[in-house]
Length: 171
Image (tube, rainbow, N blue to C red):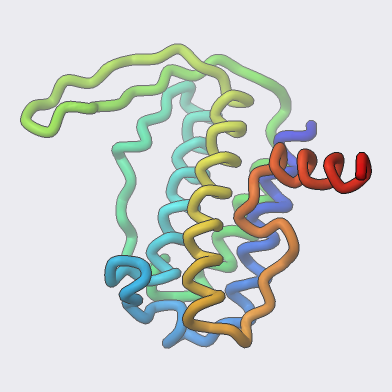
């Protein structure tokens, strides 16, 4: 399934970037990231994929239930291991299935909404969500850690890559 492979490709790209970084770079608060670290952005991506995989098992997903696990944002090796494990889990998805997604958009009260969705739709959402955060990570890497080689297409939507490629071919 294309969505599964794209998700694995995304996680593999992030793993490749993480392997080039040292622990201090991974956890360093950066002005360009509003004093957040690259590790925090990667943890955020991991937690969304992880909650989606829990939803694949339980039939319910709630992205508001993130644990904000400091260990994942501070331990680069553990983050790499988690992304590799998620890649295997994603490839094991047997097919699309209904999922109930819950979200609370009220700041002052608990007032969740429920949305009927599917695991493939959530895979697609996680792809776009990850690419968005990868674009932010890429800005930080290019400005703060120029020694890290950023893969072509890192943080660029697949539709944009295709558009750029097709535009170049047309010229």
